[in-house]
Amino acid sequence: MTRTTDARQKALATAERLFRTQGYAATGLTQILEESGAPKGSFYFHFPDGKEQLAREVLEAYGARTEAGMRQLAGRCENDPDRFIRALCKGIAKEMEAADWGIGCAAQNLANELAPSNRDFADALAAVFAAWTAAIAEVFAASSSSGTAQRRAMALIAALEGARSLARAMRSAAPFDAVVAQFTHAK
Image 1 (tube, rainbow, N blue to C red):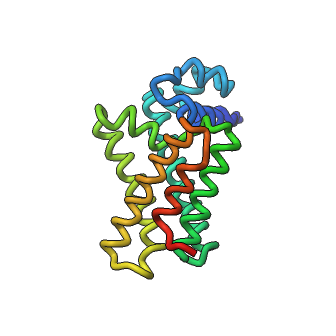
Image 2: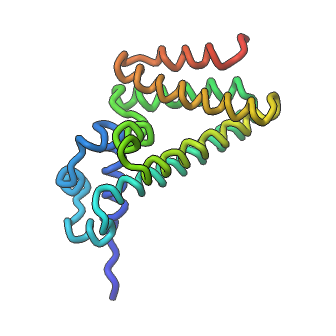
């Protein structure tokens, strides 16, 4: 009889939380194992390439979940760019405030630490950011040319990632308010 455990999912969830709060380098494998409760042998069964494989899988899941959330939000906002931007900024700020400003973006943290020296990881990160850009560009497409929608979407992602860093340091939603002010039409 095959025994099933949730050790893999616990390791992924724990690693994502730790990468978002303290970064990749500051997160040790021992800490992931202790906090997830995953046995070491089980960990290497699920992640034979170790911590880097775990980080790659965290990135894939986080990236896909974030993209899906953006697409759902776009649908709820009826592809109204201003409404979408306001809701997106409010949602991110709310998540960060609920975590006492201690939680960042997994993709941003991994990009800062792994992309400069790891080309394969940089490519995976670029793919995640490209998917997010495409999802947001669809919101802007009704009122902009394709190229303009893509550039505006990429600029919004860059602004949001910067706003996350400032919000963590300032312990305030003010950076997200600034993004809204710059990316929406006054109403």
